[in-house]
Length: 455
Image (cartoon, rainbow, N blue to C red; front, side, top):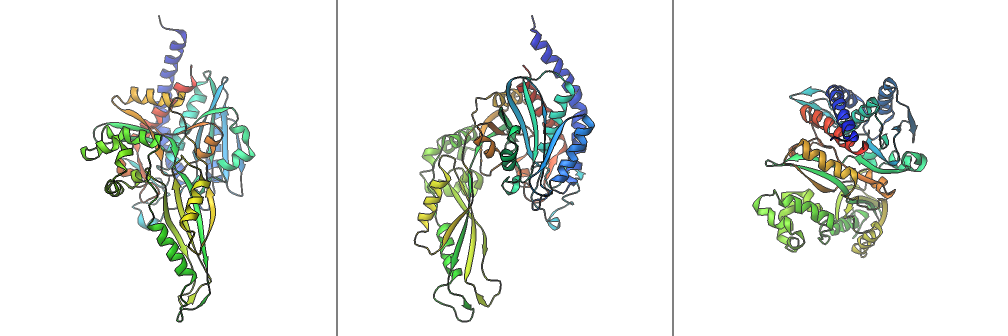
């Protein structure tokens, strides 16, 4: 005998399938329109994205709230009321990174469909995911069936520059958005077909950014009469120290889980090492080869620092009184930023440079035992037979670090399957998303969220 709750759920699935069939086509239209909206950060102008979502919510009869953290820095959120289970948040950022049109095949803000892809800045990071979340939210609203929890849609500003005008600001100024929330889905993970199987990676933690600014000062003068030292030579010495320093390799549990999963389908020359990374990293030659093979995998084995900005004189014949550099450090989430900064200062303790902290986050890991994570495992297993789910560790950061600090189990995941070669287009040239893959991802995300919010 089929239980009543099962019949209700099956009925919902039939309704959602009908809705999703039209919703996925509408999602393609929305994504093209969304890419055309210029929210390049800087300056952001995310109020344009807010206007885009307002029109859709108005047409659907959905109540929403908007707020600007600064002129033009728009944020919008809406809520579908449900039962007493901790709320589920669908979180996206609406800003995108700059795009230099001369290096693109198409106009990066045109949202053009060509060769089976939708092209444009944000097609993968993360306007596509934002539209998938919108489609899920509207499907739940249209279905009008009782939910076991509130579902909250949040589209925020400024993630690409740290989130301080977006989620960080919302937590400080509109904490009611996140009150009684227990689950959150954001960017940071997805599906990939490696040639033999489909693997879905769910981001459960991320390396912690520690951004530092170095300053050196010395006697200025004419370029024709160099002194023994200068602000520039001091800085070069300090940067060479950083460049040549390899932070000790270590494997933390969440990273070990990532490599263990990869070992199941890795090429023979890597499989044994991935299966026992704590042993493999003791071989310096292995670490060199790993960095050549995959810089992103290598970055999971240690703290890293990249020299990304450097400045000094504004004239070729002037020795300046000051030089500066900015360093993008990322640390594994098993230590505090304060601990790392102390080590960094010790590294430069005999260098005549000062170190200032620009930004440093805290670390946290979300459990793989939550209802949302289990729904991802269940639904992807059903809809993609033979696939498997693995926890992921991001070398970059997302707004999830803010919500993990609140105790919300936060996951980076979009069920769209993207070939590895396409990932290089994120923040790069000719960013694009497969139309077929995007449509399937829209339906898969609805199925995952439905599994969480319906009893």
